[in-house]
Length: 102
Ligand SMILES: [Zn+2]
Image 1 (cartoon, rainbow, N blue to C red):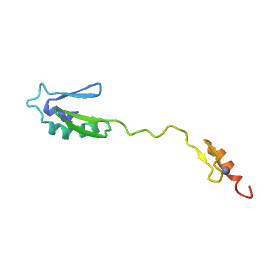
Image 2: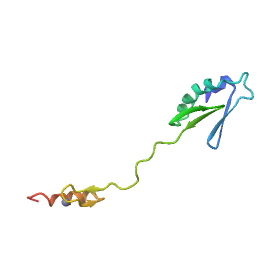
Image 3: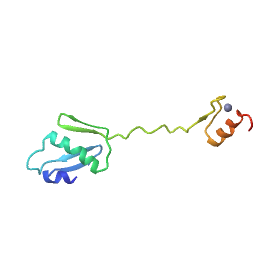
Image 4: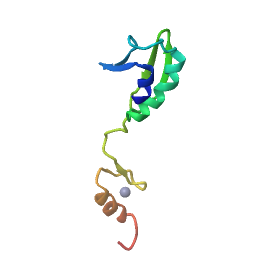
């Protein structure tokens, strides 16, 4: 947030919004000036984002995290008979029955 200091703008985080207080700024920052600053600010704050877009007098940052991978347990499926198990060890024990000599 140090980058805003020379502009005398105080960023305030309110709920899901970052409000930039420019009441003490010598001159109001232009939107495109902020638009260029925001990716740097977010990176410095360790906030990942998907997209940044300008909508009238506001800049909207989509900071949703990438969708989490399915929480469902991994399943092991026998390619020979379709036997299904969530346990890798059980799977390997099963697969053996399809091979002569085990
Ligand atoms: Zn099988």
